[in-house]
Length: 182
Image (cartoon, rainbow, N blue to C red; front, side, top):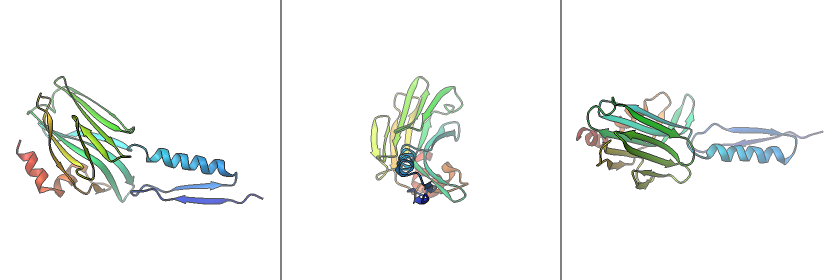
């Protein structure tokens, strides 16, 4: 008679639990731990949206607990000349490790990387850590002078149904002032 063993692993940062039932020995346990390891690599989603004719944002989802909350790794606000968000541009993204969000605006590449594993980000060759700042502003998008001009540390655990941009903007008067100083 096989003994059924239940293994309950609590995922960090409000991830859903993984439950494994095993009666066949250690192979199932090894596979469960491998699945756990793979799930913790990278982000679970990358998003981007225009906010006005000169402002857009891109963000990296770290986790989600349905009907409760979700957590962003970083969010980057992209400020450029009026009309850049209406113009033709390319956007690609990937959820690997590191995850990335890349825009080509007026022939200029704007590449953003975020590693959930290390908590490090790289934007236009400016590197940092989420321990120092997880909200960034890039000014001059699509121009020769595009660069990171502001970093800030904000709690990025957001209500499940919240708009990530609106929620982050509501949490920081400093960020709103930086974006208003075009």
